[in-house]
Length: 136
Image 1 (cartoon, rainbow, N blue to C red):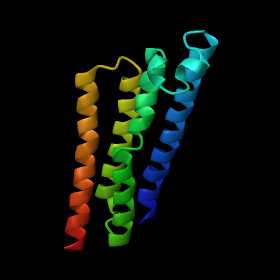
Image 2 (image 1 turned 45 degrees about the vertical axis):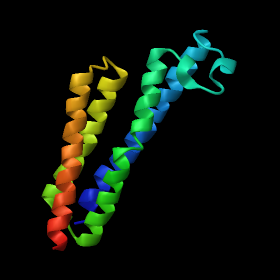
Image 3 (image 1 turned 60 degrees about the vertical axis):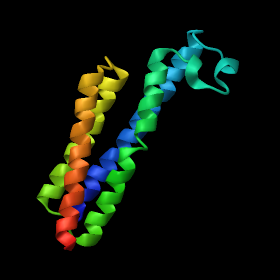
Image 4 (image 1 turned 180 degrees about the vertical axis):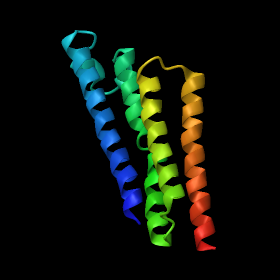
């Protein structure tokens, strides 16, 4: 049963790597296009063009609520809260992070991005609630 939660956790880790590659490519493009010089960004990333800054911000986001996600996955496995509902919530969270990335590094429409972020946080809260109910 715990395998149902391993797959979304592995998917989330994979997505973090994908965002890291996107960040590296956008920064490389900034250097090769001449939009920024290495000495301009050796201390601060503010000099990067907007696409690279958005990718950087999104990469940083991958270490915010995903930390809670990974903790919840481990707690769910420990508590035996590994049913289909928990797996569905885990996949919903991962999907919300992927959609959030595409919005963030694409059109960056804040209201839409915020709504998708909220869906992910709601999935985390429901995962937490499911674990709480399992241990009570």
